[in-house]
Each structure stands twice: as structure tokens, then as C-alpha cells.
Image (cartoon, rainbow, N blue to C red; front, side):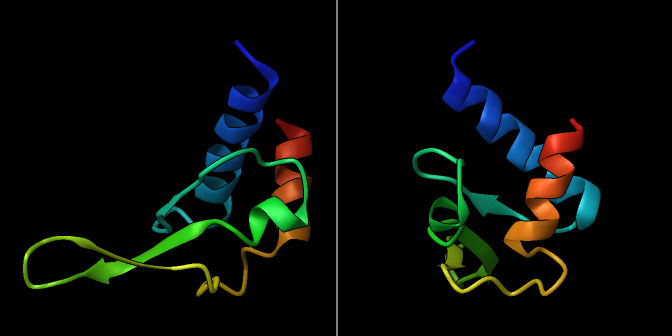
Length: 74
């Protein structure tokens, strides 16, 4: 498995550990805070069932520092 896929998998695991209800989409790698700031956070759905997303992180407990610390544990 490539390093990028491993990092993304660790990212998703870390997010679920810190906030099990958080959902998001990663486009690219997850090596640093710059990558973290590009995550698309799913905040709901529209009347047609399509995801409503934002790159503004709506979860205060999911800072890059907290997520990276969990990723490092995995």
C-alpha cells in the first residue's frame, strides 16, 4: 500500500477516534496542516440528498494538532 493511502487511512481513523460522527472527504495527501485545511467536511445534505460540504472545519475538537497526534499513535 502506498504511503499516501496509509496516511489517508490513518487520518480517517484518527477523525473517527476523536469524533465518531464527523464525516469528510480528502482530496490528495494528508502530510501537514496545509493538506488538513483542504479537507471537505460534510455538514448535511440538500433537499436532493446531495452532501453539503465546507472546507471550514466545523469541529473544534478536530484540530490538525489533535488529528496528527492520533495519526502518530496508529
